[in-house]
Image (cartoon, rainbow, N blue to C red; front, side, top):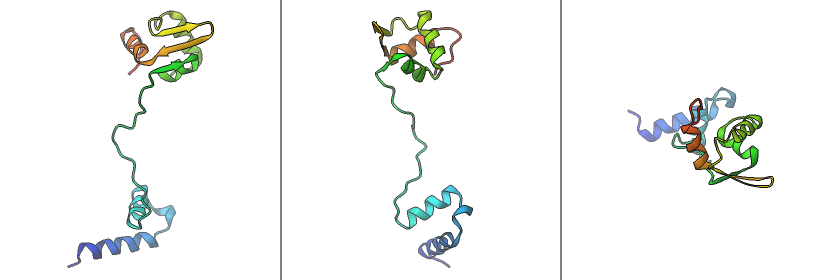
Length: 112
């Protein structure tokens, strides 16, 4: 009966002999971890980026809401986000958390 080390050595050898283009991603990462390359597979945990405190301008609103700039401009002009927006001349600062709360409360929006 083979020991765990012998089975792992055989698996490593078979992966070393396999052409790279025929490997699955999991096999490639397994080979890297076995040879000490230190490449970790991506975790399936919370990969979402943290929500910024403030976003700036129409581009920032568009990125926050996941829409185009013209749509973000229409949303801003509609007054839905007035409580979250501070504007001085052409400088727009939006409280991201407050804006998302306001959008969730508005009927017909699909913001998560």
